[in-house]
Structures are given as structure tokens and as C-alpha cells.
Length: 160
Image 1: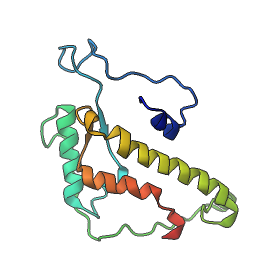
Image 2 (image 1 turned 90 degrees about the vertical axis):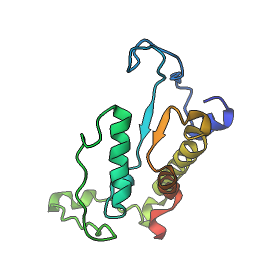
Image 3 (image 1 turned 135 degrees about the horizontal axis):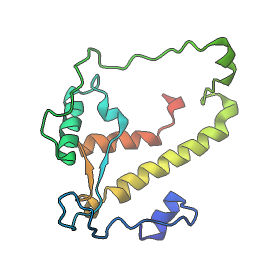
């Protein structure tokens, strides 16, 4: 994080920033020259109802990242249906008063704060974390799909 714009997006509150770019003796292969690496997943990539190949690719890429043999991690079984059915929860009576519907007008200020945070996170991930200079350290399966999913974080869920 080396620009004021990037720090402003994160609103890091003057917290210390760890430098992951330094070489260390704790590398995976013992050579001491591995930089810290990150395997980044958007949870929607696991939804094989939407795209079985995407979900399988994610597991394969994770195996490669972890140095496992292909097939070491179980694959998700194919499921029928293009859409995830809307989940209807049956809350116990004593908990119904704690339910928060973020789309209600009285929660608009909270929703705006959450949307600002998710929009900033989306921008930072796409513009800074995934910049070409980080591609050797930040691993993403199906990057175009990943970016599309992270861009969805900028959309108000109440408008759908």
C-alpha cells in the first residue's frame, strides 16, 4: 500500500501495515526466497449450481496452490438447478424480534455504511490487490468470474 488513494479507500485508521514482500527463512521449499502468497476466493465461486466447472476449477487451483495432488480435495457433487432457492428461515418465537431486514427504511443509514464498505473493498481488491505486479503473490481461480462477483458487492441488494 503505497499511495494515499489506496490508504484512503481502506480507511486504515493509521494501523500498522505488514510488509509481506520481504524474503524470509520460512518459505515453503526452504529456499528462503518465497514471498507471502494469498489464495483469494469469493464464496460464490463455490456455488456449483451456477457453474460446476468454476467450482471444480477452484478446488483444482487450491490443490495446486497448496502443493497437493489433483484429486486430494473432494469435489462438490453436481446439483440440479441454475438458481439457489431462496432460503426461508423459521426462527424460534423468542428470536423473531432480533431479525433485521436491511431493506427496511429504518435501516437505510446502516445499509449505506455497509454498502460504502463493500464498494471500497471491491475497488481495493480489483484495483490494488489484483494489480499485475501482485499476480505472482495473489492467486485467484477464474479471475474474470472472480472480478465479476466482487463487482457485485457494489450493488444495493435491496434493488434486486
